[in-house]
Amino acid sequence: MKNIDKEQYLIESLSSKYIGDDAAVVGDTLYSMDAFFEDVHFKRSWMSVAQIGRKAMLVNLSDAIAMNAQPHYALVTVSIPPSLSLEEIDSLSKSMEKTAQEYGCEIIGGDTIGADKLHLSITIISKSQHPLLRKGLKEGDILAFTGMLGESKRDLEALFRGEQIAQNSRFLEPTLRADFIAKARPYLRTGMDISDGLFCDSNKLLEINNLGFESIITIEDAIGLSAEEYEMLISFDACHLSSIEAIAYETKTPLTLFAKVALNKKRFTCKSHHFKEED
Image (tube, rainbow, N blue to C red; front, side):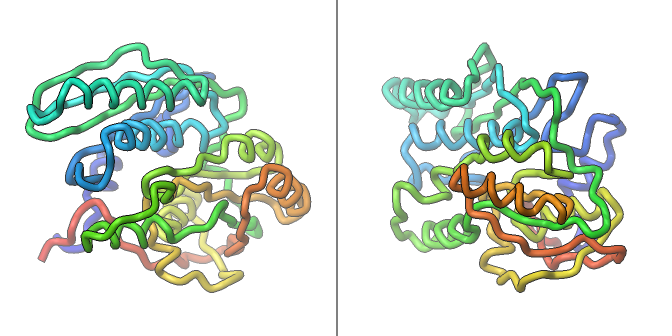
């Protein structure tokens, strides 16, 4: 088959009612998990072991933050290659633990195995009384994103060319918008973090709500196709715009309005960055 997103195909083959958001919501508890694999999400030559541990934890915490949840516990599985020294293992574990603690989260267990590459898989258990979901979008809602998108894609391409990138690059150090989401939650209709790119993630939001969009501004591919940004994609009723903008200003969160939800089937052009298309 051609042009099949195999990740989405697998997700859709599962029948649980809890699947569909950044985390599974069971009562007031949220469960989420992401993998961070060598030669899939990063190369060892690109990052220090401490940076690898920090980003692995940040991208997992992002799922909880995106849903207006407080992370409490983390379970970490690590595959340890023979080339990883004891000093590097210490650096990895300390980095993950410190990053988790910054968000009130504690590593309480997991698993370790020997393997040929450094792979990490982290489960986050969090709590929320008012989780921000993907369902609930309505015609006329405004779609917006936080931060400045595009840096992650730009710097990833530079790394592939063998170039150096800044140590504070968004590719290495995602910014999570916990304060903004917590304060803006009463005014938000839906939301999710931008991990697959603005275009692809907007399509997911529109698809699950069976709605389309009309553009407010033109978004270049360099911005719309930049994956692993971990900024927020949000929607809200236009009547709450001034409140949202005030919170964005208060929390020093850049905010861009880019589309309005409409009764059509319009979608952004995007490709899955997880798998290459088959011939």
